[in-house]
Amino acid sequence: MSASRISVSLLLDEAADVTLRLTAPWTGLLWLSSLPLRFLQMHFAARLIELGSEAGQYGDYLRGLALAAVVALLPSLWGRAVYVRACGLALRSERLPGREALRVPLAALGSYVYVALLVEVLFFALAPIIVTIPLLVIAAGVAAAAHPEFDRLGPLAPLGALVRQLRSGRVLTALSFVFAVALVAAVLNLFFLFQLGLWLAGAVPGLDPTPWEAILRPSSSLVLVLLVGGVLAVEPFWLAALTVYVHKSRSRETGEDLRLWFERLRMQDVA
Amino acid sequence: MSTPSVGAARQTCANHPDRPAHALCMTCHKTVCGECATEWDGINYCVSCLAAQRRSARARGSIVGALCALALSALLFALAARLMVWLGVLAATL
Image (cartoon, rainbow over all chains, first blue to last red; front, side, top):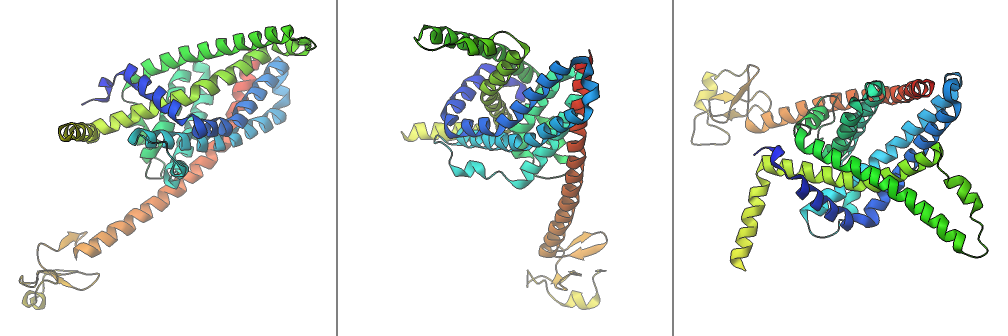
């Protein structure tokens, strides 16, 4: 049975269910571990916008910021690995995963860091081609979701496992489209939420919203803040959807879905 | 090397006492029957010694692989920061 027969709507339903079950503490851990990276990326982009065409003259300063962002990528990758492990445990049992979610196998984590850095490098090197951007964003997400399959640490084995998971292009394209729309919706919702907050603050006697109005007026900095907020809101659902996808395609290959189906039938017969 | 010797043929298999010995395991020097002996790279091994050989070969492979992945990760780490700046400057200039 091929992975392309997996229903996208079913994936999204299961991902929403898993994400809502994992809200505390695992989504919180994912956010905490990725906040430094997101803020450093935002700071880097804001400085670039500020420097404009003179950015080339501040190479050392920008290199320092970029290095800090790449260092911050490491805890973020650990947070993603733990979240994906928690999703996988939640998919296998009805109860909320405990501390066992923190015990990410070292080989899988090491392989994941290697693959994620490779995807990151390819992303920066090929970004001017534009078309590669969504492809590498998908690859980065699938690498996180498929990292439990990276049981052998080596230069080629994890890449083979990643390529095997990327075969179902139709499902991944559909998922990416849904999450791209979700990201835009999240950004717009955050913008309107900020504006609503400002409007409500204006109605409170004795509270001067003028400084906030200056910060929250449409600008490149606000766009960056909204983008970071949107990514943080969507990322748990995106990772959960990809984990469900990897889980389903693997269980179809190994016949685990049939075993579970027979088990359910037997339970029904006993009942 | 482990070709069946005249001496081994008179002995019995270490795992199956009712069967005549066919070969000598070159690691533990036990005599084994045809079913228990496996020839690998021209040398006969018993099942447990062959499993140990495979385990150590796999461990060697995984250590080499891990070192390669570690070295590549360090290289990618340094490259990622440089490429991030290159892309940023390129985008800012445009």
